[in-house]
Image (cartoon, rainbow, N blue to C red):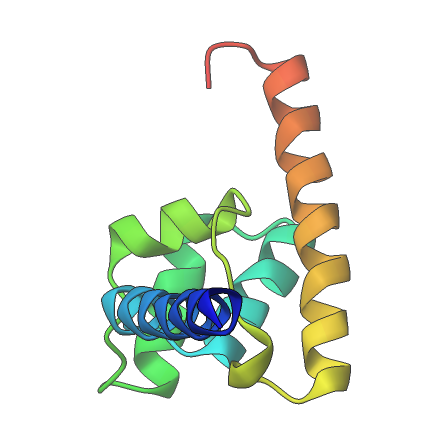
Length: 110
């Protein structure tokens, strides 16, 4: 019996955490994917930020969030995207991490 309640508690905890982190991020999964794509194309973060704001003036993204996400430091949850888009996000995230780490190795002052 206790194991059943413990599993329910853990599941509820995961759902609360996911909801909290998603709301705190205040940027959609598609915008995260857009940022990742543009980073891999070599865009600067200010250009990515300006493009997002021009396309959607009501976006909650700000410059600091764009810079943070551009390093690959942004977790999306499977419930936010379709399964294909989520797999695409995961591959992009790995590539962005590799890209960012490669830049750090070339330029240790970044």
